Each structure stands twice: as C-alpha cells, then as structure tokens.
Image (tube, rainbow, N blue to C red):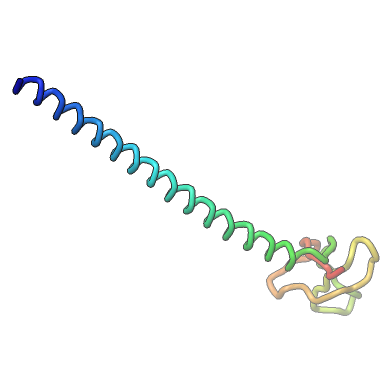
Length: 100
C-alpha cells in the first residue's frame, strides 16, 4: 500500500512540475514576443521619421555656382539650379540632396 501511495504521489508531483514548467515557458515566450513587438514598433517609428525627414529630396551635387565663388552650392541634377549651400567640409562633386 505504501508503495502504491508513493507512486501516485510521485506521479502527481511530476504532473504539477510539468504543468508549472510549461507555464513558465509560455510566460517567457510571451515576454520575448512583447519585447520583440516593442522593439519593432520603435524601429518602424524611427524609420518613418527618417523617411519623412528625407522624403521631399532629389539628387544633386556640390559645385561652385560660378567661377568666382569660393563656397560650394548644391546643384540639382534634375533642374540644374542652385538649391542650398553645401556643408563646409564638402568637396566638389560630392552628392547632396535638394529639397523637392
């Protein structure tokens, strides 16, 4: 009789332990998924902000507006007009972006 009680007790404890381990695994999986979704949302927000900031631009290149100029200006490849001043560390023919 004691042997049977021991076996039943061991099986019951094993069943509870397995259920608890499964529950812990499920919680870990849910936490990992929540962290993934939060990180993905942050990435998407940052990407969209960057795209909105950069969106209305088209390609250009840095060059002097005329032969007497000492500063470089961003010349639009599409329209051929000067759109803005290039950064101070830019060189001639460096790529730049003109606002749309």
